[in-house]
Image 1 (cartoon, rainbow, N blue to C red):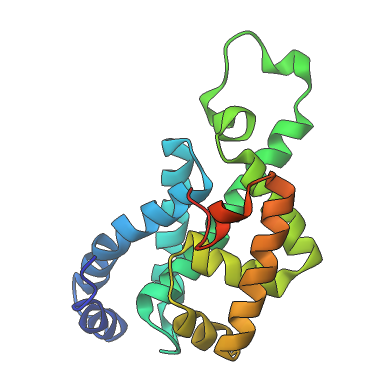
Image 2 (image 1 turned 45 degrees about the vertical axis):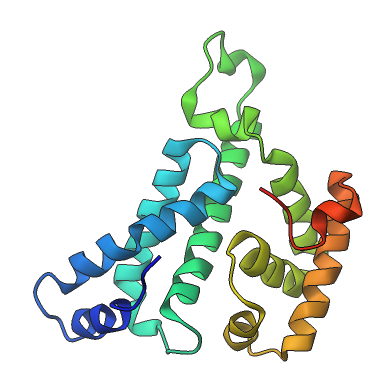
Length: 190
């Protein structure tokens, strides 16, 4: 992923240059879609979350403070948006009675019903309730692929604290998912 031109695109978009926002969103779209796909296994759901993420980036670009990389900021937004999309879909599904589901599966609920990462998302929801700071660090490291130092900068936390939180999150996830320790030594393989 080549992010060398992103800082220039961010500056141009903030200055209101014609087509700069379009160019910036086109440049970050592949990263956004990859991040959303880590949470949402059904492509249309991931694309929905990606579109929402791009809209947030476009409307909140002035909120990017420069603390951490722009790619890190985008990763935070994409991760949060994908989780919100999943929660919304899960709520819609649980609010639907079994009679309303019918014989033919609705592709809009595929990620919630048969997605391969439901156990991960459920364990992550529990982690967020029990240890929100550890969950944030875990998402940025193991799902967002950000380096420890950037997570520390984004969360305004010392690197050792970030590492401790990620370790605690991995222990929690291991227990919830029933994954052997060696599979979580360097983050989950999702």
